[in-house]
Image (cartoon, rainbow, N blue to C red):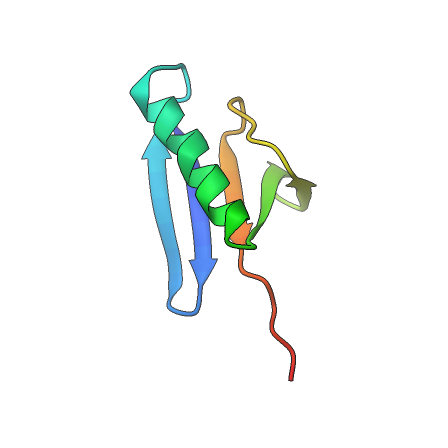
Length: 73
């Protein structure tokens, strides 16, 4: 089961889905486009120590992280 983790000011939200196809995969891609469209950075955890930024939905990723844009002052 794949996971999308969305970080925000309140902590994180986790969305689990079956990445083998169907409606769940389409919903995960829609969520990816929604959050990246809002300015979130998407990254795939490739190992416990390594995260790689992505700009397109990867249906094979087991874990995708979404980080909000930092706002400076």
